[in-house]
Image (cartoon, rainbow, N blue to C red; front, side):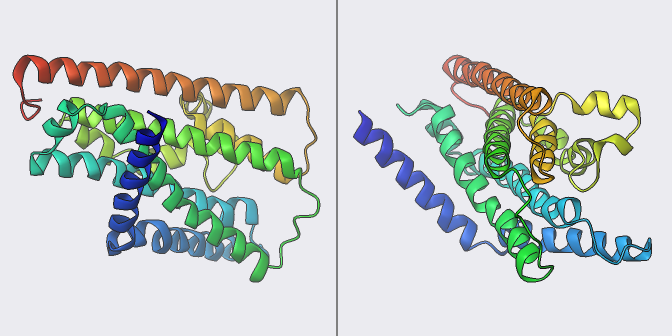
Length: 263
């Protein structure tokens, strides 16, 4: 059983990796777009009189933007391609659960998007000579893992939402920039109006980012950091549970109608 599980995982991730590497559109999402966002942020920072850009928000934030954008569009594009080519019903009707296929796809998409973060860190070290000596390294690593897990849960949720209803695609397409604004990818969340900060509390990315930035500034382990980790983990699990519920709705629908093109 375990052998079949890992064989499926490797094959699915191999297919996803080939699709991402051979697609100029995907490379643009993971590499070109984050570079543009970071460059614009640096120009704006210099125009405001800051000779040295804030690397946590400008450089690292650009990398996170690449991870999020890549996840939103690649995970939803996969489901749309399955629906368009008529393979979505075959996947849902196969012995392998849809949630497992979507989970493997989302995992690889996030791993591919992590190249944006790696490029951001390399730019911070090689170009801006950033010193990481004063950071809380274990806290940064744990925060990044929670960010990774939160993105994965949201990717599964979005993919299942799109499988359940094609009409949700219009809504999903509009998520990229609003979520980036609400979660403060490239600026402190405190600059937002109170009502926008309240809305952003439903996204695990916001809490993981805040914890990671606190740890990068050298914040030691305390109740505030632990609270942000627990909130990020809890909200991520909620998204995962909702995705599991949507997966059940998809299977129920196809058992009744035999197709998924009507929704």
